[in-house]
Amino acid sequence: MSILDGRTGLKKVIDEVAEVTGYLWQKGWAERNGGNITVNVTEFADESWATMPAIAPKKNIGMVLPNLKGKYFYAKGTGKRMRDLARYPMQNGSIIRICDDCASYEIIADEPVMPTSELPSHLALQDYLLGSGSTYKATLHTHPIELVAMSHIQRFLKGDEMTRVLWSMIPETLAFAPLGIGIVPYGLPGSVELAEATLEQIKTHDVVLWEKHGTVAVGTDIMDAFDQTDVLCKAANIYMCAKSMGSEPDGMTDEAMKEVQDVFNLPKTRPC
Ligand code: 13P
Ligand code: ZN
Image: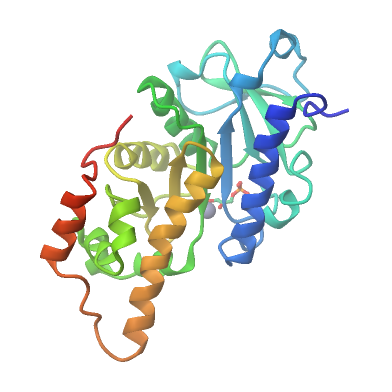
């Protein structure tokens, strides 16, 4: 028996997670257990979910997140591989219920798969999204090669230099990531400090880059969060390709970028 049985809406969401984790592996962004995902699945919860027994001991999140009371999330399991999740999503992830104290969670289905070590970052973002009335449901942390490589170069970590370079590589980057990429200085994986810094950056950016580690994106669904990351990584890849041809790429001019911004009437703040 799976919690997905007879719940076609929920199954569709989990199938989409599985589809995206396959892409993460194919792209080379998901070595070993690299990366993690959460999706808010509360809309699929019926009355029976509230009384479903916990199948593992209650655990603390490490933060108090008031907007998450009684909410349900699918979370990738810690130590689990994206490529395995692509075939068996309910053996490599689980559904958790946030307890009434807003500071702990229980696993309710299907198996006692412990959620990702980056749960503080994911849930801090989910709490912010719910609190701001956003319709966004998904959060994605992954290890995109070119973006992580750029985060090893000091000049890209200052101000909005990385955003400016990425926008200037191809007009679509500006069109689809109009808030750009926010930088979080290196922090210990899984830490509450990393979660707090990520939360601050996502308020004003499309995607957050953890220095020398990876990205965090939010989206209406997991495909959308993947697309946000992919668009920025594509620009980083173009930058690298041009560099490897022997010189610094010209990039679009400031005028050309301003024209894209004006003609497409791009938002300058997060439309939550
Ligand atoms: P988990 O296996 O705990 O999800 O960790 C992977 C990762 O990318 C940590 O940053
Ligand atoms: Zn990671």
